Length: 421
Image 1 (cartoon, helix red, strand yellow):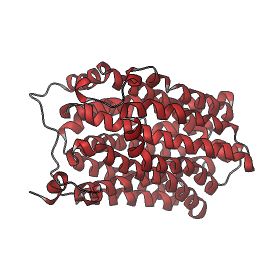
Image 2 (image 1 turned 90 degrees about the vertical axis):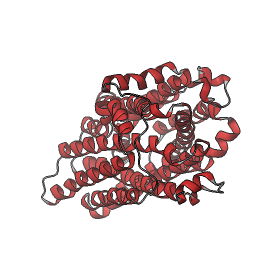
Image 3 (image 1 turned 90 degrees about the horizontal axis):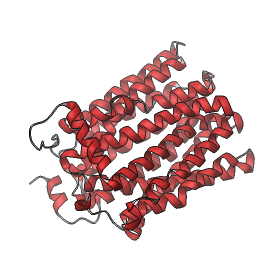
């Protein structure tokens, strides 16, 4: 029996002693840091160096997630049939190569907004494969009664990346220009690929439950399971609605901070990091909060009490009047992470193993497809009604998204029971 297999079976005080998960966690953490640095650097370069318009900023924001619309559904089938860690390594390597084109063209004085959009789009396609694979591979590494703890740790790293990534990215752009931060992000992706290569746990594709059908047939099975499970349907609708308005928000938030509030690149990074600070607290508390409230109850009660805090952001002004935005971002970040830990763990528990990758892909297709459409809408709204009005629309829409889970079977449940799905 391998050391990693034994670590899954013996009682451990912490997942830190699980060697395979520790490497997997480290690789995902490095990838998350790279993603948040990149997601800050590219819009900052577009807004401050290339003088992008609100519509171009919306296109850039949409490009980061449009991959879920392009390949989101077939990605679930491909991941289910692939060696998932190898797929993750290749996705990160390709992201690194794509990002390296940005500093090269910058040094040659050829960088354009169009290139940034193209790089963001192709990196987003790689992110689809990486994200679906990592969510589907976690149950291979951990027993299902430890998934909540594992997801909480992964969310902690993601939230830490949200704190430090924007600040580091913003500071580096201001100090060194766009080339070196992007190059550093590429190195991060390569480092994550090397860490995944060191995981000793067998890297096997999900087992088949019989002869495989066509691509369309397998996609349909994932869609059908998602649509016919009432709790999963409500969660997916809530996530999609919140993501749509988050896309609207993201399309104009950098312009709001740089143009309306006249903040420097470093200050923009610091403000965006506040959302991650709330997320870190949420990740650290998620296991305890979910156990105290119940997994089902946490999915609707936590967003009900935290998502409306985003309404504070459009109230922000210069100087001390920036405080409402900081409070709103912090509370929303806390709620989003606790919600995500609960609902992702739910999918991993109730979905049959042979359907998990396809269901993960379906949920992410709907959720991130909505994020993409929201980003496009946000760019257009920013041009039509102004940046602050667009933020109000985004905040109200995010607050209303919770109605999907509040008025659902989740209100009559405390915890999820796999057999009931």
